Image (cartoon, rainbow, N blue to C red; front, side, top):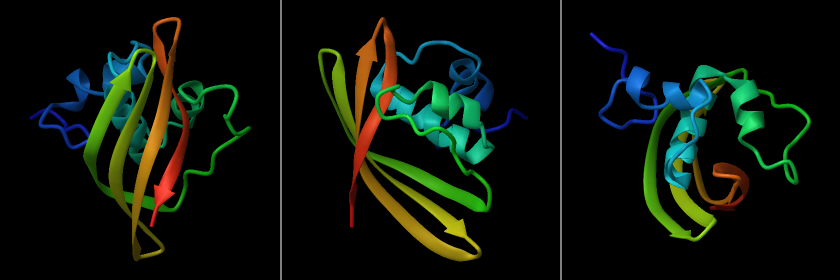
Length: 122
């Protein structure tokens, strides 16, 4: 039985986010956002940093002690080489449940999408 993809699409990981984690370009900003969520679940820090735009990329990431529970994409809008993706991600830290709702901004450069930044909604 194939391993389901953490991004919550009804696809196996091997044909959903894994090709992006292995270096394929994401076809849309939503696909990149989903692959980044899966990377958080799988603790793929190098992938997260490589898909973060250099102008806003942090020097490192702390990925431990978070259990990711699910992702819901609310909206995806693309205009040329810019896009926004609004999503809700549920997770637990030290047994306490949290909900992150963010409207993320993405930019496409040289045929590749990058996460730029996000506005967190309370």
